[in-house]
Amino acid sequence: MADIRHRVGIAVPPEQVFEALATTEGLSGWWTRDVRGDASLGGTLRFYFGRTEPGCVMDVVELEPNRLVTWRCVGGPDEWVGTTLRFALSEGSGQTIILFTHADWAEPVEFLHHCSTRWAYFLLGLKAGLEGGKATPFPEDEKIDDWG
Image (cartoon, rainbow, N blue to C red):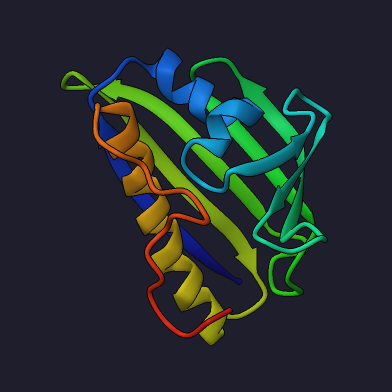
C-alpha cells in the first residue's frame, strides 16, 4: 500500500483549522466550492469538480473537535475508493500543525503522484486563506498538468 503525506503549519488556532476541515462551508473555502452533504460524524460528503456527478464521496468516520478529521472514500476515482483521508491537528510554536495522510492506495500509480501535488497545493491554499491571504479552491485553482 502507498500513502500521500504532508505536514503544514498554519498560524491560527486549531479551532479555525478544524472549522475549515469539518464543515461544508469551511471545505468549500479551500478545496472545491461545491461541497454537499453532512460533515458530522457518520455523515457523507460529496465533492463536485465541475460535473453533474460528484468527483468523490466521503464518509466521515472520525471527528474529534480541534484534533482530527478522518474520511473514508466510498465513491470517486477507482484508485481512491477504499482509501482513508486523515487530517490530524496539533499545536506547536504558535501554529496549528496539520499532518495530512491519504492512505491505503493499492499501488503507487501515476495518479497518486498527481494527487500528491494537488493535495499539497490545496493544503497550502488552506494555509493562505486562514492566514489572511487567498485560497484558490476549484474552479479557481491553478491547473498543474493535463490531468482532467
